[in-house]
Image 1 (cartoon, rainbow, N blue to C red):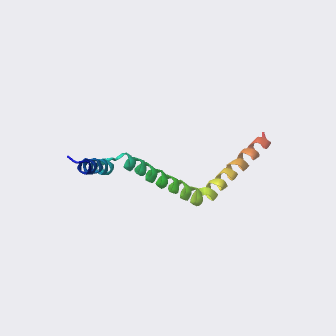
Image 2: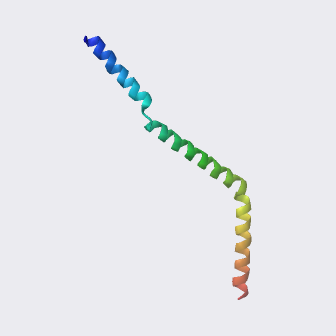
Length: 70
């Protein structure tokens, strides 16, 4: 075999291993999952933030009133 034929075979093997490598796909899937979870948490904070704040304020008022009355 000539050097050009050997180089061509070598390049084909590199390209074949590049396309069959799936380690990057797993990282991309994890990144997508983290993006979905982060977006969901951000939306929950935006939509429920004032409701949770109001509930905590009410609970604090009840606790404060109870502690002053005893």
